[in-house]
Image (cartoon, rainbow, N blue to C red; front, side):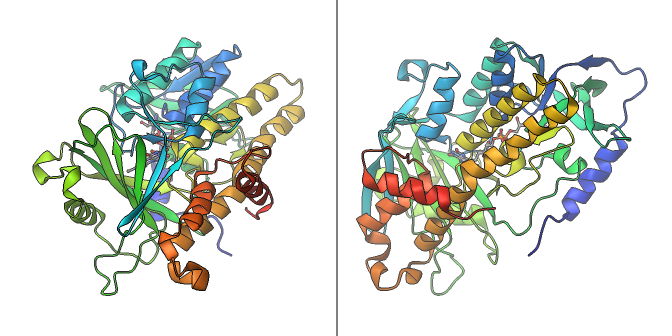
Length: 447
Ligand SMILES: Cc1cc2nc3c(=O)[nH]c(=O)nc-3n(C[C@H](O)[C@H](O)[C@H](O)COP(=O)(O)OP(=O)(O)OC[C@H]3O[C@@H](n4cnc5c(N)ncnc54)[C@H](O)[C@@H]3O)c2cc1C
């Protein structure tokens, strides 16, 4: 079985980081209990939970807020829970658009599934632009006492040569790229998919995990206040004469501001050589007239990025460094959803760090930190395997055989796939399907 491998890109990133890994003479220094690198959803959530307990936290972010982030801007009830746990006002008056569930469109039919009402999660989701969303979260972390440093581009780790442990990071500040040094016994890599910090610490991507991509743009539409997130399942390879279904979907999420975010996500790009921008352009042109799509109504360029999935960068803890969010590959392989998992993993990491820093010996601190990868595995590995299976089945209806002759159009099948993919189940739910799926998610094999 192929294990973690260093890609050419990672090797280049590591070479760069190694050169910069030593503290420049005379550079100003600061220290803290914990350094968090990257103020996306994962980093800001980790920093907020750490700072809330009174720890001294440095949150280093290379850009300045507000900044754009390529995304679908859709939030499921899992993300809503993380936001409300942080004390964030998610009311419509505070600028959030609420949604009731997911509409799955397949062929000419569409099915609406309400978010389930569960004790752990609210029965609604949200939509908000990332420029706004990420700034709000970072400022929340700062309001709890995290020291947010914007325009702090982390160049590489500082490593104790004797032990191999990370002891801090070097950074370049502002446009002048002034050198700076930050020291802490524990560092959290929350620097997204490219995660130069993890690569410099030799955490390479597992090439045996699927890698996804997603592209999006915005267009003006009368459907901008749609109360459902909408996913179109029949996404086909335009270059395949038989119109092969791609393992992914296209979405239209009303933004409530006169526009919709429209995009496509493909959950496994292996064996495909598709021009994704062109596919999205063509897909939009085929939208029914009610959507009001015209090329002139497109308000932003098509942009895309990778979806690091299925816990594809490991170990999630070693030598003083924890990987959270996209840096640790926490995007769901069933849906491409990443924000809720980024926030949850940030929180799990913070909880392990708080426990570690309250211990008296190095050995005991290590034990507490090693709980983090175990927590991630028990929370996600089974569900990620099942979500992936559900997405595979939807992408390959022939695999469903006779039971699937209704294929993509069967409401019962879609309901099971929906619950599996969105990972919203619990042991004591009223609905027996929820209870069953929860159990299956717990026992499904995952690595
Ligand atoms: C087109 C597209 C659509 C998507 N749609 C959705 C969706 O609708 N819903 C959903 O839940 N998920 C969606 N995702 C996935 C989601 O965007 C990610 O999973 C999520 O942003 C991960 O959060 P993060 O905090 O781990 O990383 P990021 O959001 O990437 O944040 C990383 C942060 O680190 C900073 N950083 C990077 N390098 C450095 C450095 N050297 N020094 C300091 N700071 C640094 C970056 O500036 C950034 O602020 C989508 C992804 C794509 C590409």
